[in-house]
Image 1: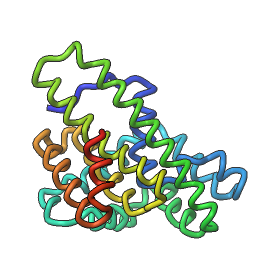
Image 2 (image 1 turned 60 degrees about the horizontal axis):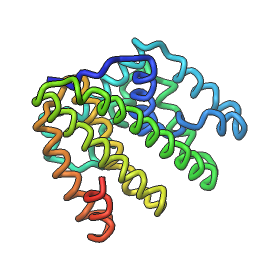
Image 3 (image 1 turned 90 degrees about the vertical axis):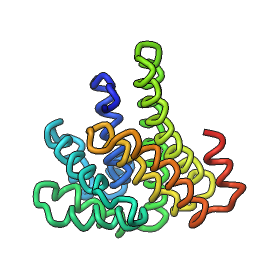
Image 4 (image 1 turned 180 degrees about the vertical axis):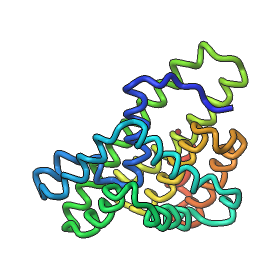
Length: 225
């Protein structure tokens, strides 16, 4: 069963912003890029103006990768690399693919500014989606309520990781946050189940604790969601 969220225009916009922005942060900063390097802006504008059908095809492509049966056999870096590798095999999303190279070639200070903007934008999108979940809670049965809680927990972990980045500038936490957002999208699309999300919470906690940050910071991220 997938989480049933009314697909309002606002919700769809925030959903796409969180999913696409986590993979291509530059999409979250069109105004900044337009002032900085106008020719980069053209591809950003094209992606942002794709119709809903094309955006949904890209979402489906991304979630198919992170819904692989052997997902838990690899770490988060592997799956992000797998996303990029498989993107290169497609011609349909050329503008989206080129945005990665643009960000890599930008001056480091400008790149950090773009990532900062993206993190704030994605956190805002997550907040909007979580408010949608809270709105639903009084109107659903116990099973659906449990699913809303678990799904919201995945997003709250991703948000706390991004919040930690905002405080520390530790880019390593962006990788698990991105994968959790993609796994959330996979669940919404019905590609993985609620038990998979429960495993994601545990696995992401172990990953972050063992490979990225200290116990004290880990407790701040996980325990204060």
